[in-house]
Amino acid sequence: MVDKGFRTLIAEANAVVPRIAVEDAQKRLESGDAVFVDVRESQEVARGMIPGAVHAPRGFLEFVADPEGPMHRPELAGEKTLIVYCASGGRSALAGKTLKEMGFDDVINLAGGMTAWTQANGPVARD
Image 1 (spheres, helix red, strand yellow):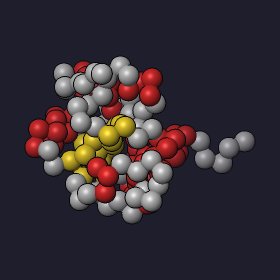
Image 2 (tube, rainbow, N blue to C red; image 1 turned 60 degrees about the vertical axis):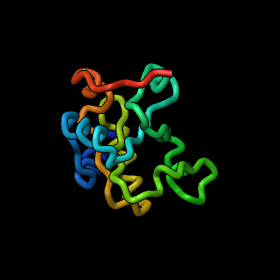
Image 3 (cartoon, rainbow, N blue to C red; image 1 turned 90 degrees about the vertical axis):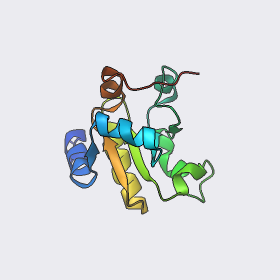
Image 4 (cartoon, one colour; image 1 turned 135 degrees about the horizontal axis):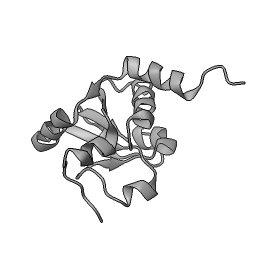
């Protein structure tokens, strides 16, 4: 038996990581004052991502976020707000909590994730 299931872990993450509505996130994308962090798996990203987002799969997040990590992305080392997202908001809530635990102060979870983004006709970049 599991002491804490995924629902409990996500609820705990949502309690410490604020959420941002798609409309407000789109404004942040336009202004360029935030870094979008896509924590989905590569197969999901292949279907499209928010333009300019940094891909940091949740399983590698710590290695990408840590300046001493072997996969570090310098875009995460600045002073900008980090807006994390996944498909629907669960994995990104957990990722946001991890980033906060690592010392990142300004982390926000995109409410509804990529699903809500595309439903609101947010721009999508495809390779």
